[in-house]
Structures are given as structure tokens and as C-alpha cells.
Amino acid sequence: MNPDDVVLVALVNTPRDLDMAAREHWYRIPAKHAPKFFSGAQYLAFYLPRAFSERKWRIDTYAAVRGHELVRRVDLIPEEPKHPRAHELYYKLQLGEIERREPPIHSKRGRRVLFLWTNWEKFATAREWNDLYLRTPAHEKLYDALRADNLDIERETFIREGHSRYRVDFMIYVPHGKIAVSIGDAPGRENLGKGKVGLTVTPNEIENNLARVQRMIQRTARELKQTFTKEIQ
Image (cartoon, rainbow, N blue to C red; front, side):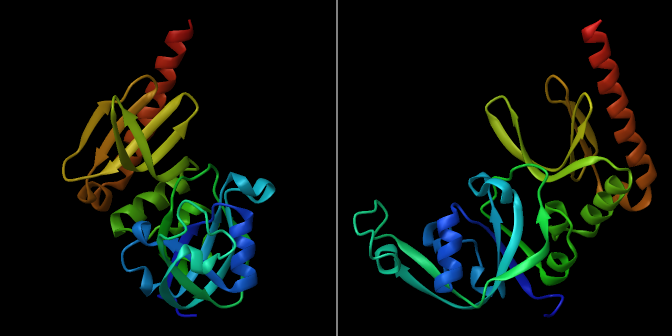
């Protein structure tokens, strides 16, 4: 394996799908939902959702990708000719042997992510889901600092504000709220509702004054705690 080998992490909906991949050495991806450049993946890793019971929210298996072809679902699973998507197109990823990933890569919370790109170096060394992301040096530097501060972090999660839904780079879970941190062109702060604060920091701040960014996050956590204390008094 090369550290730069491309690994595609894919959500596996059911144990049956994973069993089929292990038995028949292929995995299907709906053509209309396939990520861009998926054909560049050299390895496919499987993220297991709640349907896997004790194995939920983890990556514990992967396989080398040998090739791919475009086929109809009914050609892949002929025993289900009346399935609603029987004649829809799927990419059939041809796989090598299913390998165990030891220890498993765990996610602290369930993830509604269909696909995640990473590389072999990240995949081989990750201890948890958030370690897998390949982002800018500023993102990685801030992530390392937040982790060093023993904060409860999730990367690239979604937040709702009214009828809007958008992704933030880091969600920090503190005892009395959440701090949504984004990396952007201009610094900022906004109230996102009860117990939620949004902070925007710039790459320049992270590069040149990381300690100040850390203090700002710690101060925001204290403010959320103080607000919570006042509300219950």
C-alpha cells in the first residue's frame, strides 16, 4: 500500500449488502448517487450504520477495488426482478478479498454520510471517524489543537437554522451547548439559537494566532455554561 492510495468510504445500508460484497466480491453504487471520480478509488471501506447492531457506527472491513462496470440492478440481483429500482443503473465495483480493519475505526455518533474520500495513510492510522478527513492545512491544524484540548468534536456536521441547513467544519459539544466552528474569509460570531453559537475563524488566525482561537472557543464554552446556569436559577 502507498500512503497516497485513494480510499473511498461508503455507507453500507444492510448486513445483507455487506455479506453479498464478501461472498461475491462486488459492491454496487447507484449511478445517480455515485461520487465524482469514484473510479479513482483503489480501496473501498465500509461504514456500518445502526442496522448492524453491535457493529454500528464503525468501519471494520475494506477491500481493494479491481475495476468497475455499469449494469442494471436486475443484472446484479436477478432474484429481485420486481424491485422498484430493478432497471436502474448501478456501478458494480469489482473487489478483492474483504479484509478486517483492526482495530475498527469508530464514530462517536451516527453519521448520515454516503461517501467520504481519504487516503491510505489516514485510513491506516485513524482511530476514529474524524481522523479520516483530508482537508486544508488550516483545517488539520485546528483539528489537532481542538483534539489536544480534549474537546468533544465532530467534523463536517450539519446544523439547522430556521428552514436552512448547512455544513460546518467543526461541531464542538460542550456540557451546556454546542459551538459550530467554520473556517472562512472573515472572522465572525453569531447566535444560532438556544445553546448554540457559531464562530468563523480565518486560515490566517489559525496559522498565526492559534492560541487566541483556542481561548475564544474556551471562552464561548464558559459563556454557554453561564447562560445555562442563569436559565435554571
